[in-house]
Image 1 (cartoon, helix red, strand yellow):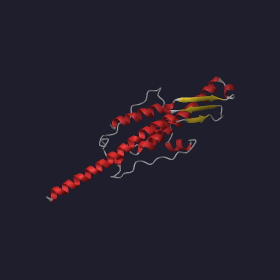
Image 2 (cartoon, one colour):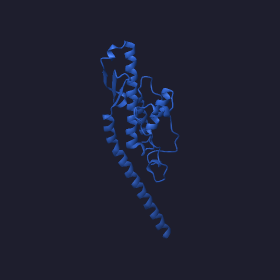
Image 3 (cartoon, one colour):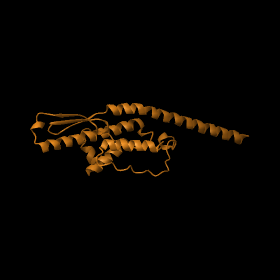
Image 4 (cartoon, one colour):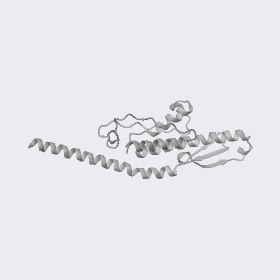
Length: 196
């Protein structure tokens, strides 16, 4: 009878461990609502070097505001267009980095993600530079998030919500008209669907 009793104790311990991990998952999913509120309120501002153009970007690279100084209106049309586009790209890129930071803060560890690193790598590749070079040119140096902790008791390393044995698939390429923010959100939602 001791073997049956030991087996029952082991099963009870496994069930309690499963319940603990389930509660951890529920807590992580509760953070998704908070994350969505932060994403909706997100703003990133960029100003041209000559301070003639200011762009405020929101989530998904949406343009919330575009301000032109009187000096901007004195520029040649091609020069002004170039200044607006360069400033717009800066604001959208900063918005994507902020979005990634919010996602990492709320659910990154639970799903073994480091979205900030992925965004920086994508932006560096798109600009033909390195992550280090890109980070050195950022307006405010953002600390890079460490990767997930490798711990057998860490919820992020268990396949409760995903099958870790599957090979990760590369996200599909974005259509040429998609902004970096749009691509970021598409990849995020594709990753979420993979984890269901």
